[in-house]
Length: 512
Ligand code: XMP
Image (tube, rainbow, N blue to C red; front, side, top):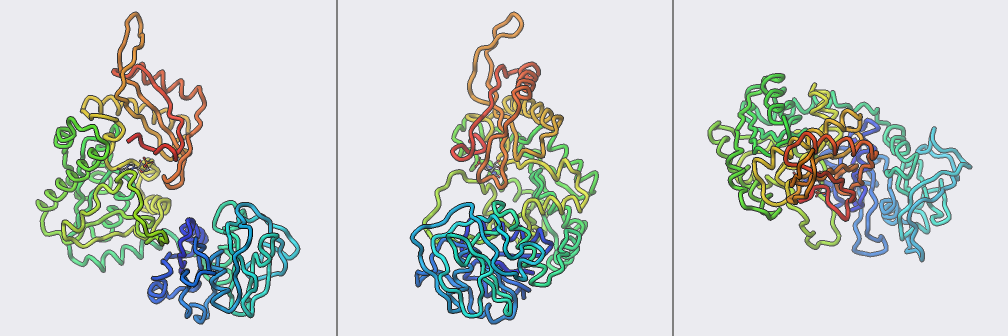
């Protein structure tokens, strides 16, 4: 495996992705917890990430010094290169102009890390983002590439297998970057690149059995990919010791609740408690128009219902959750200040503490697309595995203002037509999320000989890689016209359709 030491770069997760794409298992540890991670993992190589600090500050973070005496290969990226140089006796200085964006490096010497990729005398495009730069490499290092802004764009100590790059190989704007990281992982560290989902499945099954023993496990299903994959994996490990609880808040999309029930009870034969709590949720939402209060109510009620069911099942020591790696990575923060709550997303946070149960979280090491790959490995149907993300509070936050059963039914119909057209056009997988929103606005229309006065429906579709930023999906006008015509004709209660052209930021993906 490879240990990635995080110095707080925005793109550290991408390093882990690239290493795993090369078939090598990797984990990220913040610089101040890296020594422990090293002990636990006994890695075959180390990557030091970039970061916002300046090596020229005495207070700035360093890699544990003994990493440089462990006899294993090290790759330092940007800040990682600078701190490695500084820690091994070189010099780093602030530079009068920072360098950001596309740059070109000239390969000065052959190096093991460039083998089969870059040859001496060639020029290659990379992505730079730095203020400081190395001005004198540490003893033992040679310059293997240079650029105008960074005379030591890449440095190597072949004997110790230490490499430093000023540019960012992990971002897509360094076109050969993924290959460079793969070269480090396989060629320099000598790792085979045979980390696969089939292997992960076997390892996890053994771990779950070891953790749970003869104990009982309860798993809450949301209808989403993560909890479903976690449940199927755990069931494979411990069979009937697992009971799933599906708290159906009545705010799901069309046909979704039935799909969950038939998949689990039918295809997998997993014990499932289906709690139909629609009335409870809808009556509690009555009169509530504030988006945060709607979210809080749904989150709290969800926990109450779940707890009640867990009590009825009785005797369960373990709670299974589909927590993913991006939720677990302890982010390195240098600002220290509280971040502003834009929306409270963690609907069921606090559940494990309250219920005093031990957690089983078999997906903790995985990224979203790896969870999907594991789902396919476990035989989950493609419509389930490839499903767009859906928020915990469901349709309640796609009905701005007060929620009611009638409004939910209207929205479900419009949303189903929209998604059906998207699937028919073969666009579903190119889109991160697509959904309809039912606006609390009525407008006048004319149908046949009559005047109508009905609701407006907004359509949203975005592309994104993580939901943090998003672009509007650019449908053809003919596609949107077709969807609008169908919705107005087929859904009673809607007489006008609009398309949301706002990116994130400044908009959010959901309307509430
Ligand atoms: P926003 O609207 O903040 O959404 O741009 C970013 C992503 O998060 C999802 N989302 C939620 N997920 N509970 C959830 O579990 C929530 O309260 C919630 N609000 C938004 C949203 O669908 C998108 O994928």
